[in-house]
Image 1 (cartoon, one colour):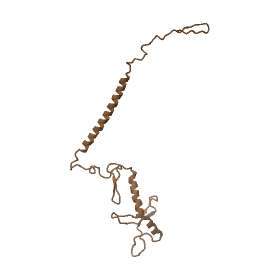
Image 2 (cartoon, helix red, strand yellow):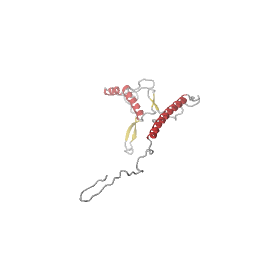
Image 3 (tube, one colour):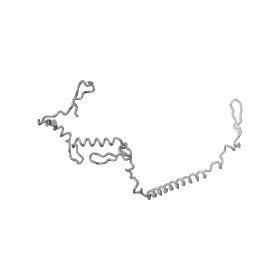
Image 4 (spheres, helix red, strand yellow):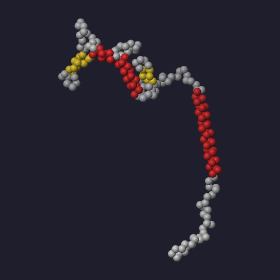
Length: 190
């Protein structure tokens, strides 16, 4: 059926082309098999699950084999004997410190600042409770007591020279100072 256009007196007819087909552009059922794609996806999923289960069983087997492994002989070096001698690097295997109270703190996987924090904590405790020797006896007084003793007028203990009790001995020596090129001296303790 052709359409006729009337306008300026010119007539054109459009021919019927519904019977013409381009074989190369049409869909062929043999191009993509939906059933084949779905079969591939199902087989791939089953294979993935089977491989995951197989690996899980394999690692279980390896763990059981490791648990049954023979222990090292009596002549083998222990873990601590294999470490390099002291001093060791911070955060390295075997790095530890021994505090003043005799406790050993393992710091091999700790941050480098941990050693300073432990030392600072010991210093703070020494200031508050007094310095202690290895047996735990207090050999120095806490800083608050020392300040109170100095402020109260008792003064600090010192050595006495000769027979004059209460008289302080001057243990300092005269040393030339660097900035004065040796022309002036200052007193320094020996």
